[in-house]
Amino acid sequence: MKDKQILVTGGGGFLGKAIVKKLVALGSRVTSFSRQSYSDLDQLGVHQIQGDLRVESQVQEAVRGKDIVFHVAAKPGIWGPYQEYFSINVTGTSNVISACFDQGVGQLIYTSSPSVVFNGKDMEGVDENVPYPDTYHAPYPETKALAEKRVREASLKGLQTISLRPHLIWGPEDNHLVPGIISRAHRLKKVGRLDDLVDTIYVDNAADAHVLASQGLDRDPSLSGNVYFISQDEPVSKWALANEFLKAANLPPIQGHISEKGAILAGTLCEFFYRLFRIRKDPPMTVFVARELATSHWFDISRVKNDLGYTPKVSISEGLERLHQWLAHSGDQNEAHPGN
Image (cartoon, rainbow, N blue to C red):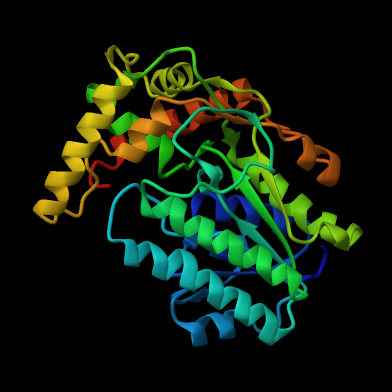
């Protein structure tokens, strides 16, 4: 990938920046396309373009002259108007696909999500043959599924694509999962049965998988159109891992517990009142979150190991140690700069 011209959408984000770092280390000439500029990327020598995925002309300009596009940017979350999710996750992805065709880009590596196939029930050891569900309980998984389908359709029209489904990405500089758990530490409760397992993935391992996807297409173009689950290949108790995150932040473990039915009822009521009063911030519970928390979801990643040679280089224990060090350093910085 040396000297390749590469665009990373969302290059300043948590996963996007990890991918950028890998590409820069390989000698690629990287451009990031995001809504804002990031000093970290300046320090890496990354060219930055500020723009909006929803504006086709801006996407076309960002894609022009590129050999490979890593489409990482998306609107995540559990709540909000469907149209906001659709405009970024679906229309934005369609704009990226169109630009790839128009600008003669050879490859598109797309960051999807296992939630695109979540049907509200346990998913234990399933592989990429599991179908999309008929209904979704939140706009994020539904719009990510629509986007993934468009990427797969593009592969049938000649664009080389691979879609990756990383589950619960975490690590230093996480701005979503770990901070969310820490910020809710005082009111977190375990949901449903306590022996369920989930897959996770350390951020550097997720970035490695994206690079391997591009290299895999170079080696074997017949992989185009494939979708892969990626993970630590080590299912864990979500509650044990959440407690490890809290421990890394020097916080006590989760104490309370609520049944699955109780969580779904709470989510239903929260959604009703949040819609009624048009509250935009995330509710404390939703039906989608209740079902996610009450079920197992771990995946057979044999396909990505066989096709792309993926193995997680950073173990969960090593990742937790890195996370602890980062949280401690972040705390020291915040104490030194209380205005931050």
